[in-house]
Image (tube, rainbow over all chains, first blue to last red; front, side, top):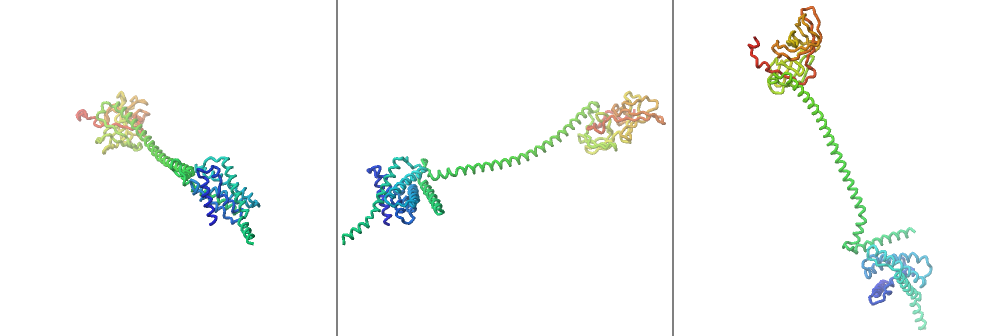
Length: 164
Length: 276
């Protein structure tokens, strides 16, 4: 339930990033990517491709002109990340950074490829691809860093130390 | 590894399904869903192949039916051709008969007004009989002379309807009064055994040679005078008072097609003329 809430929040934030008044680069950040990169890195059960599919359908409903391409792109990113993650032992924020970049690149390209036969795709530029990859990677790295900090444990230990 | 393949396959199918769902939502500039245009493009080779096969089958059926019709038409034309060939032969025969008739008419111009042409339908040379079919339904009197284009054939012995039974001059009991062209030698031609004529009553002192033409003298009261009867083939002396003379008939009885029945040729003569 908490995850669903977070997904909804991320989608709302994504819509807000694409607001006409906001900077152009802001919409290049794929906020829900953390829900694709996170589960395999956190060693959760292997349901993330299905979860990514649902996430993509939600993405389509909110952000795409038609339902389908987003689901393809997000599930493709999830499949790619879930394939590569078991090959790497690193679970540090650096891994979040790298897999975030991989997922973002796959998602952008897959989305473009899915939209192309429908005649809805816009021109995919290297600049946008790079921008989206870097910013999404940074976003995932930040999330990974925050998770690595384990603030909840630190807070609890801090409280217990003060109470002593 | 197998699970991974299944996963990839399932994921691929899922993506294809999602792409189709998306295509169903998008419309072409013509207002047609993209999915339909994809379906049409995919099905066009199948439709083309189906159309080609249908056309092929149609052409095959048309070809077979045309061939069958051609065979039937060919059979009909072959039948018509055979019929035409038979008709042509009949027409050629009629033409030859007509030519014979013209020759006959030229030979007996004074008798042609009362003469009746007849077509030979049956001949029995061994028995000296001939059956002819006259052109008009008219009763022919017995003893009517019958001539062909080459000479005397015989006389009518019976007539019924349009059919006439003719006794040939070669019949053993047939007899014709004959003479030479100059009229010096006269005799009686009777039927011989071998289809020839036996000329009787020729005096021993008569100067008769082979090849002399014999014509009717009219002395028998049946045949008009002057018609060719035969040509002398053999002259021999015998123990009797007369020469033994053989002659071949002038008429080609075996092949003649048309004969002329000189019916009423004596119409202009009276009984007393004959007596006188």
